[in-house]
Image (cartoon, rainbow, N blue to C red):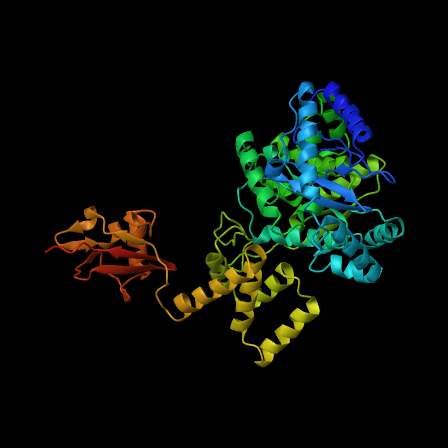
Length: 530
């Protein structure tokens, strides 16, 4: 966007304010952003920082409080050139006036939320705030610094800037990611600003943490696609009205060669090679690419660009997080507090939750799938999930654990309650109840689900008057291939009409087959010949 257009928009805002005393226009969109703080006695409109379908969101100030009045498709598209400013402004005035006639204050409004935050902060002592913010954290560097920032925030009303970065290396987020998101949400609950940083530039490098080989660079197209899904999924945990969504290409992409050289001069190769993963690879003689050495510097520079008070990450990110502190000191900024969350074990109870290992619970998965996967974890791991994935206090969890130890609470009851909590967080309470009922009938009581996919019998699975079960499973989507279907049959994982199948050929006279493979079902209708 040209400087001329920005200037013309700013001038036109002033003109509108003089023409119509109702409000002044200040917009934030993908192509421009103008900021205007309401003045005493002068109502104004400003950006809420929300990410909507088309990137538009507006707030109106009335009686000293901001109120969301329009968003998404209700708003006109931003102007593409100088000539379009007037029509855009008039359309926006119309949309906002229409919203103002129906928008009433509510508990969910940004203004009301701000009041609640202030009351919450004032009602909690600094020690109580620290206890709430550090619940479930593995390590904080340093708690004393965090205390000082909270005291300052209480005195001045300044909101702490809390950042966590996510490289969009996969399209879906899982419960392991939400450990960090929930910790960020605690800062939001106390009124602080959370920055969800999408590492579209660091994603090109590939985080070398925990890797014994160089990550293959991601394409720009894949990064952008994954980033879009992240923006949708992250607001299942974070409050969009109190979240800044940023991309580190904003400041990393414009760096020229000289600036990059100066950034590299801030750290030594010896220090970077102190990282455990680099040290092991160096000792083993495994290759380390030069671009991998840039990753900690790029992540640290993010903190400088955003002027972070707190950076959050997993314990495996400790080195990178500390680099941010060093670079901030060099830039004359107070070093950020480093808050690290523990790594969440997957459903296997051994390895870090990972989609590539198949031990993950995705937050976008159907309710029944999420609930079933939660029920697969061990009783011991269940308590860790309660600690890291729910809002229950440590004292409440300890009390439940004591009840389970004495037999007053059955572990299965506690696990069902956990499954309902997690499904409700990412879907709804009603869907959580349905998922629990489905699990109880299908898995615990071995009943046929009320709704299963019905398909006709494929013609090519019949041979010598018998049905080839391996081919049938592959054709109806219960196995990815015939070879995999054979493996499932040999493993005893296939039941047809309630009977476990051991042979590849099935002689059948029933009008339908109810097939179960693990937790997946199909009803196959067989055409009856006269």
